[in-house]
Image (cartoon, rainbow, N blue to C red; front, side):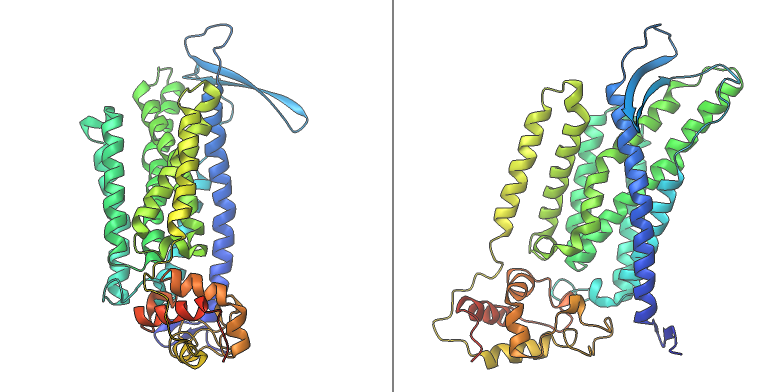
Amino acid sequence: MPLLFSVGAMSPVFLEWANLFVRWFHIVVGIGWIGTSFFFIHLDAHLRAAADGAKHGAGKIWLIHSGGYYEVEKLKYVPPGKIPELHWYKWEAYLTGLSGITLLFIVYYLGGSGFMVDPAVAEIAQPEAVAIGIVAIAGGWALYELIWRSPLNRLEGVMNLGCFALLIAIAWGLSHVLSGRAAYMHVGAMMGVIMVANVLFVIQPGQRRMVRANAAGQVPDPAWGGAAKQRSVHNNYLTLPVVFVMISNHFPNTYGQKWNWAILIALFIVGGGVRYFLNTYDRGGRAAPYVLGGAVVAAIALALVTSVPMSSGAPATERVAFAQVHGVIAERCMQCHSAHPTDDTFREPPNGVKLETPQQIAGVVAKIKLMAVDTNAMPLGNKTGMTANERALLGNWIAQGAPLD
């Protein structure tokens, strides 16, 4: 029986299975959390004043689903003993956070330095990169808390701009010390931690105070519910950016670009614009269609800009021989992309891509162009040290029709 743990590192077999099951669990509980968040924001956006005009009522809404009707009423407080059973929404958030952090450790901290470190970005070791990532996550959350617990938290516009500036600074900083893929993931992890901490330290405690006050026959302090509502809205707007980060590793044309941090921020703005439209349009928000239109235009412009290859070298006037190309691929790529990888991260060629024969190389020319010419996404973390001249050589060979002779 093979050992699950090799000397100094976990077995790739064990890590692969752990990755699968934790990622699966993370997606399932994440869907539950996102669903409830979107649903309650939708409810609040569509509440209508109750007919009796009760002072403790915040509004009512009628819904149809599952072959029946639902009448939902939101109350600011209730008389003692009136609530026989409360349904709390917290475990989806906690389990999403715990599984996300576990996945971060499995893939990035235990999965090899190629995911965390890019020598072309910064010459740092894996332990240093991990420490930077953890400090960024914890520090970003701490600064967010300081901002929103300060006396100025009522100036929401100013505070939002401050947080956005902080987000830009962290994204920029991480993109200059970690690999592009790791920088994206740690910005997303920071926002995910903020969201879970909002539930754990603000939303749930505030709601518990409300319940205790109601049970004692007291009127709850509106500030408790107000703080919970404020953080719920924050979480709602952070959701789409975090979801993008979760899938960003599949799109190297974002994190593999020179200006990857700016692309990340632009995509966050697009996600926030879409969320704003969904939150306000049905309430008659006049700006909502323009915000959505701006988000769509920005997304299209971003796609066009990132379609321009990173390499600015002019096409070679001399014919590039396949032997030159094969030499670069053999030295820089085949450690991973072969039938039996020698790289310490993979036991099978990633995505089944093998680059050992001319025919195999010819079959994935488009992928080579995207991953190694148009972006710096491959080699992973540039751990084999592919140079700019070698990338230009591959690009010129492809531009000449990728001949195999």
